[in-house]
Length: 341
Image (tube, rainbow, N blue to C red):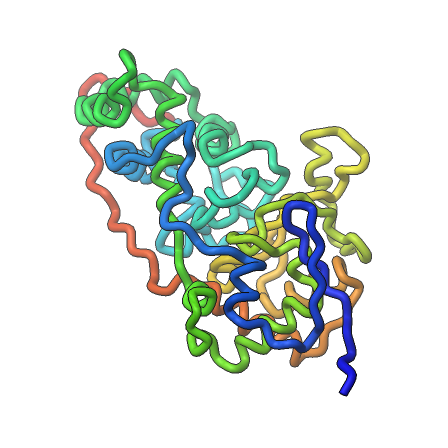
């Protein structure tokens, strides 16, 4: 009997792979499309070492990196909330609201660029941004270094993490340490168990959702080990949402072709990180799936198809749950610059 074939585009390294809608995707095929999640997303320019990770973990939770000494990286990327904050846009210095939704930090080091507009090439560069952003942590590089150098335990930790540096307590090394810690925040899921060769790791509905996800062509953008995070794409490739005002990557490049272009977000832990989209305007994952199908593929999904895709997306949630105990931070000294509310 003839099969009814519909084209599915899967883009990786410039290649195009075609598949049939409704055709079952087995673990080997899923592994080819998505790849294997590493234990650490290492960086040859910033090798992940135990000393660097220990320091970076403390700095990730360190509120004294902010001008007011009240905001840390964890404030907007809460590791107890799957690396996000559950807000449409985050609260910063003096209760200022950001303009874009804070994406999850979990698995973020796998992505080919950082921020919605891709203005940072990696988590090392990204870590430098929020600390000195006047709407976020609002500090200065000089204030950060001054505070850290005034705390003996941090001075010792920087010397251990960067033993080859004569003056290791620097803003550059602060970002490198935070990034090294973030590079360990990989979250395996039941889907990774499926890819590893265990078909029973997914329920029948989740497997059907995977088949629909691949068959519709969602993997044209949401591919690779991050299940996204590997390309820039125009939001509204076929139907631009009426509510979309953010010009996206155009704000960085000033290239007309980059209007409404954003980095494709990773879908790992997406079921745990509502609200959705660059402005955090959509709180229902099922609604977000329907919007994406219409905006990017020109498809109006049935409720059944949307629910099956959501079931698959739930299989991407951290399993086991990532547990990161809050570190005990060293006390300030008498010379530590005071909070500046």
